[in-house]
Length: 395
Image 1 (spheres, rainbow, N blue to C red):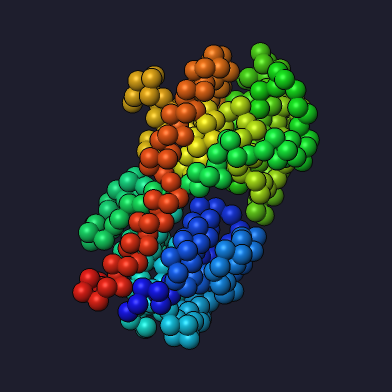
Image 2 (cartoon, rainbow, N blue to C red):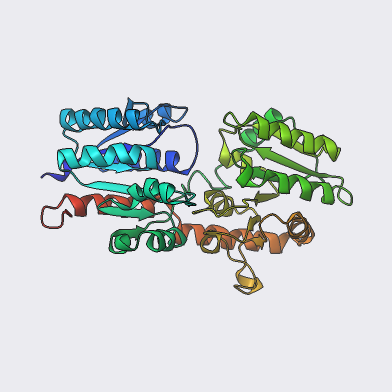
């Protein structure tokens, strides 16, 4: 098989926002750059335009559905797509579409790859079976070593097929030197933030959902504004239909009389600018992050970052007591602790400028060494190549 003829089909529920979706777009671009053909099947979304602009072809299917009937129909549709387009390998990035992809791959006798993008709740046997599809692939990509260990514990028979590949960050896009003052000012205007010299701006960039910990950020804000009246928190993220939760956050802001100190501007399409304008970035997850992309992106932008001490953040952020202060790239606090978060933010505010800048430089260097988009793309395409070599194809 000529490498130039390779056709890869990635399958995701939708292309709205999130790690799985953005990784599909990034790998699609890498496939095209290699001279191969990239196809992505999903229910659609705001990232389709970028995907197609970068050379991939999008195919719309109801892949968000968990209905057994729809899963079966999607399997039939994917089988047709594989045969009609001469697809050589299918790569699924979520559980529901993975079941359809597994059936289609077996029917067409092509390699099947999955990527574990999340920790996936597994509280009972039914959920364990549902999750197991992600460990049934010829190669199971884990987006961190923490995730790889979790997969191995849950699915011991998959251990020899697990390959950790850290989520990659575009170091050119997330570069403080390439984000213009005009772009920064435009975003601040969109948020309704007045530019003031003594303003200390703290950004939390995450979809509005319970486990991302926005309540904790608001409680930390309530503590900080008492002694730091110039502090401003921006919780940028859409609620994706979770209107009850977003309303709860607004009520909490009102209860603490924080209307002038905590903003909820909705979804943000410019994560680079959003973090670049921040004096500090907070990742407040109260459940384990399988990777923690926002923390790496903040580090690449040389922003001080405060994360919760849970999940894979040990791989993305370095902080005492795990390392000495001279190796710090951020701060870690207990999940759910507004007290610790507020204290960490006070420490950031009190740092001399040269120390804050040194931490930022170390964070960007670590991102370039371990979490680059180029490294993720090269490792993923190497797996495709290996599986498409007849002598190494796995049954």
